[in-house]
Structures are given as structure tokens and as C-alpha cells.
Amino acid sequence: MIFFRIVPQNNAGLVETLGKYSRRKEAGLHFYVPFLQTIRNVSLAMRPLRLPDYSVITADNADIKASVTLNYHVTDAVKYMYENTDSVESMAQLVRGHLRDIIGRMELNEALGSTTKINVQLAEAIGDLTNTYGINVDRINIDELRPSVSIQEAMDKQLTADRERVATIARAEGQARSIELTTKATNDALMATAKAEADATKTRADAERYRIDTVQAGLAGADDKYFQNQSINAFTTLASSAANLVIVDGKEISQLGQLPVVGKLLEKGLK
Image 1: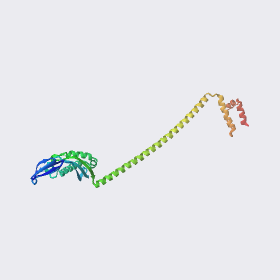
Image 2 (image 1 turned 60 degrees about the vertical axis):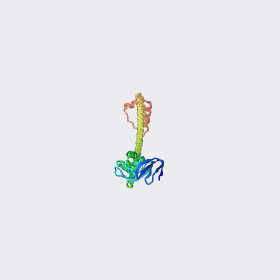
Image 3 (image 1 turned 90 degrees about the vertical axis):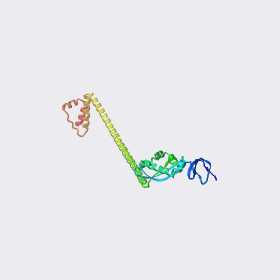
Image 4 (image 1 turned 30 degrees about the horizontal axis):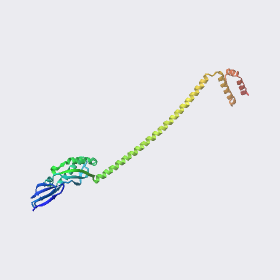
């Protein structure tokens, strides 16, 4: 009696005779002797595998949970089926071991921000597993690196403290800037006032200097009649005031008497 079995597309058929592997069959229809032979189908298609969360310790002794997803396919059906009790679990253990080694050399903050770098290093560390497990890892990805609850709470507190510190510094810098601007404005106003006063003083001094220079220039060109006229004006003012007593040198009186107007003023003062 002969039986037949169909090996599906993208599968490998492993023929066992009396429980021992004898040959491989490709996809298609194949015949075998029952009870003496059997055909095992091994899928060669790519399969996803999610490794459950497991603990990883960083270089600074922080406990984080790692979640990994990978895609693999069987490249050597014989090694995959007969040379390992569970090739998939062996592969998963290898991935976990390399991941612990990679993250164990990083500190917490570096590990949390370097998932892409970890993916690359992990893929390089695993390499081609065909010779060992008959499997090739096509893609591997770190889905999540999650700190423990206590570490997450400490990180949240640190983040809050950092934000408050930044806000405090910003407020202090704003107040310092405000004081600086106010002080500068006050100093500018004082300097402007002082400059205006200095300019006004200089203008008055220039005007007084001009007046004095003009008077001196006029006096330099004046004759005796000018000074006599000034004396007459002074006598007129005194004669009109309550204190109309004038004491002068006799020589000056004789000279002043030569002017008719002086005589009239003296007569007015004697009445």
C-alpha cells in the first residue's frame, strides 16, 4: 500500500524512514509507504515573533522592561527540525542574551534614547543563524523600553524639578533684564537732564561773555563826555531819592559845573 502527500508551496517535505530522516521533498505531490515512512512539512515562509517583556539591567543599575518583535524564516529545514529541540526558543534566548549585553553597557537615559542604535547592534550580534538553528532573522525591532514604576516616578519628579528650575531661571533673568532696562532708562534721563543743564549754563555764560565783551569794547572807545554823562545820570538818581547827599572831590565839582545841565541838577538838589 502506498500513500501520497502534498507538500504545499513554500514548504519543505522531510521524509522519515523508520523515524530517521532520509531525504527532502520540494513542493508538490509525493508518495510514501505508510507505517514505514512519513513526510513532515516545514514552512519556509517568514514568520513574526514577539518576545514578551523581560527585565534588563542598565550600566547604572536601572531596571527596565524590554519588548522585542522580530521576523524570521527557516533557511535549513533539516537543522531546524532535527539538530535543535526548539530552534525558535533557542533563537529567542540568543536575542535576549545579546540585548542584555548591549543595554548593560549603557546608562538608563542613553538606552531609552538609542532604540535605533540598539536595533542595529542587535542585528549585527545575531547575524546569520542558519548554521546553528537553520533560521535567519530578517528584521528585529525594539518595540519598547519601559523603566520600572519606581524609576518612572523618580524620572517624573526630576523632569518636574528641571522644568521648575528652568522657569525660575527664566523669571529671574526677566526680572534682571527689567531692572537693567529701568536703570539704563533712569541713567539716560539723568544724563540727558545734566546735558541740557550744562548746555543752558554754557549758553548763559556765552551770552554774559558776549555782553561783557561788548561793554568792554564800547568802553574802550568812549571819551570823557560819556563818563560825565554817566555821572550826571547817577546824580539825577540820587537827587530824586530820599538820600540825596552826595560827597565828591572839589576838583570834580568844578569840572562838573562847567556842564549846564549839572548846574541845573545841583540847583534842584539845593532847593
